[in-house]
Image (cartoon, rainbow, N blue to C red; front, side, top):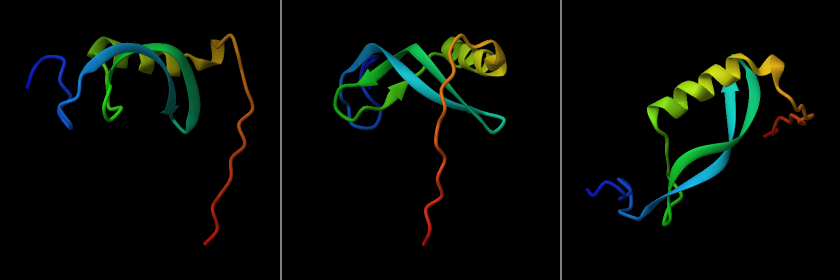
Length: 78
C-alpha cells in the first residue's frame, strides 16, 4: 500500500478540511475545518493522531464554543 492509498479500496487520499460531528460524554459537538485525508473513491477519512487529540480537547472545552445551534433529536419507532 502506498502512502496516499486507501487501505479499503486503494483510492487516492487527498487532504481536505471537513466538518466533524463529535460525540463526547453524551454531548454532540460540531467542529468545522478539521484537516483530514479523504479517499477520493470511497470517502474514508484518515485523521492524524494530533488532530484526534485536538478534537478531544476541543470537545472537552465545548462550553466556550463561539457558536451554538439547536439540533432536533428523534427516535425511530418500529
